[in-house]
Image (cartoon, rainbow, N blue to C red; front, side):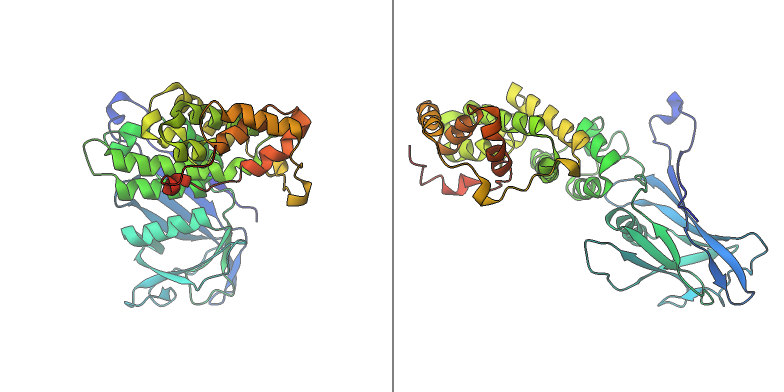
Length: 367
């Protein structure tokens, strides 16, 4: 049976409700049926995830309900899988193609009228993380199941309610276009940023500068991981913008200038460039990267395919370096001044550089 996913935002959108975000409910249906041995009947599993709020501690509940085309034997304390405390348990085995399968996780649940309900914040968070990080889930809730219920998690929508409007993170990033794009296209990456935000943000007041910096750096690293999956045209804009940011720093900090020039460090996260035009332009590029990244754009560049240094390139680097910003910035400018076909491979190789040379500030690069 195909996976059925629905996202229901509950509650009318009235002015009286805007102060408190409406709960978000996500419903999942198992893609297979399982025979219950007690009655030899076929059953499917429905999971309803209801998220009330997102803060330092997640709040919500998860309900597991059996459904079938005929009457099913009720789930009770004799048929449910046991937990360590002799309550009912939900046995979950998350799997992903990217990692080795881990051991099953037993989450304690309360039994209410044949429905298993999880409300413990830690169990709720464990299950939500599995939804976002993994490709599939196999779940067992009864001892007489002949097989596990299987769920395809690759297209599950974001299952959590937003931060409350007065939360420090929401006040700073509530309408952020980059986070909105990550939430829609890459929920696993979005979850990592949201987890960091929950850990670093205070419960009230404003977001401290150090917490804001950590969140922005996490966003930059996330967007950076998508850079190899963008078109050559957008890649060229990224490198050109890194060069512009490096020139804005100039000779005041050669190591930072070099790091900016190879896109290893973001103008958005550099205090000297905060609220400047280079930072604003780069942030717009972040959004484009998230919205346009696609595996079809991946270009692997073997070292042997990189173009040898030419007299024209050497001359470009010499001229750029005289403007005073460091060797890497000069190399970037030298690349950008090459003919389009000559610079494509160099750009692909350069964008993968992630070394931050600020630690070597005591040894300025050769001019």
